[in-house]
Amino acid sequence: MKAAWVLLATAAAIAIQTTVDRWLAAGAVDLVLVVVVYNALASERVTGLLTGSFAGLVQDVLSGGVLGMAGLAKTVVGYLAGIVGTQFIVTHSASRFVVFFLATVLNAVIFMGLYELLGLRHFGAPFAAVAVQGVGNAVVGVLVFKVIELLPGAVERRRAARSRFRR
Amino acid sequence: MALLDIRLRAGYLFFAVAIGHLVLISAQVNSRTGVPILETVTFGAFAEVQRGTSAVLNGVGGAWSGYVALRNVRAENEALRQELSSARVEIQRQRALADRSRSLESILQLGSSTELQIAAAQIIGAAASPDFRTVTIDKGTRLGLKADMAVLGPKGVVGRVVVAGPSASRVQLLVDRNAAAGALIERSRAQGVVVGAGDNRLRLEFVSEIADVAVGDLVVTSGIDGIYPKGFAIGQVDTVEKSGVTYRTIGIRPAVDFSSLEDVLVVLTPTPAQRVGAVDAEAEKPE
Image (cartoon, rainbow over all chains, first blue to last red; front, side, top):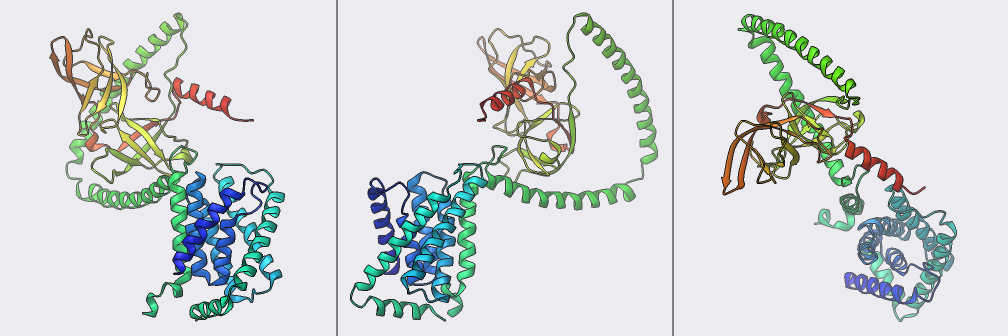
């Protein structure tokens, strides 16, 4: 069930991303990253890393880049976000905002860092672009949490799911 | 059952997935030498294993030849001393010939272009698969080796460097099925391409119908491939089969005995084609 949700959410994120990105400022939101961080926070680290790995690879395939670059970046982000989600209480909008923002920065550091390190692409000084995307992802991420929590029984389902993963 | 629960092994899973991604990336990205990083890293690691194995075998071999197999050494010494004397005479004769050539060259106002910078290397391993005729040598990029450098033996052409690791390199032997070298018959100057047959044999192909080729002719490198320097021995023609006026098969017995190679020389001096390539690449580099 969870795998189906991850597949569906990733597919939807990519579909929306490729559609909406034409109207938004290019690269203002990475919906796939939002899905990865949401899954990691809402469940735990294994789900986070598997979602990140899968979603990143799909992004790599569709973007025509080097396979594994986004996959690795999102794997690390998903795993760490999962740890944050299980070790800290991340239920307040402000804390979620910070997690989404930092996840975006980490994702950019790994992704761009790998490309720069291997000399395959140069990004110049992408600080402003990363900051804008961080804010965009954080806003969308917090909204996604809000919307899903409005659904009937959502909080109980999430608590039940997380208590299963906790040792 | 709890031990098998992957959720309890999240750290291991994370490392496995991360390494999986790194391997995937490495397989696609080329290193500065143009070879995929995965291949360079794998080859580098395996070369160290081969180096260790070779060192052990050399140690055992050294102990055997240094202590056990010294029975006929006195007679062998005498023979070698005689051989050395004749070699010294031969060297003097060659030196005289070289002096004469130099003076003729200066008369003709031709610059000397035969001085090659070389690096001696030892063979430390063979190919992992019998389908490939390659060897591993114990010198790499630290000593200036690069892909496509020619590798020579005392008797002639051995092959070319295909993968250069930091401290070891893989050499494709001329007898490999995918190996080829521009060649010419020394006597008639007929040109062709020498290709490997996979076993210890070579074939001369793309020879003109009107070319003069006979059994016993010496085949040397022509230098047109941009890898091998001109004039080095490849082998001797030992079969010539014709079908009408067309040469069907020209078989060559290699000058080098590939089954007993131990030490080789890598030509570090770039060929004229490699120099032109390097200049072009430098010019194309964005500022």
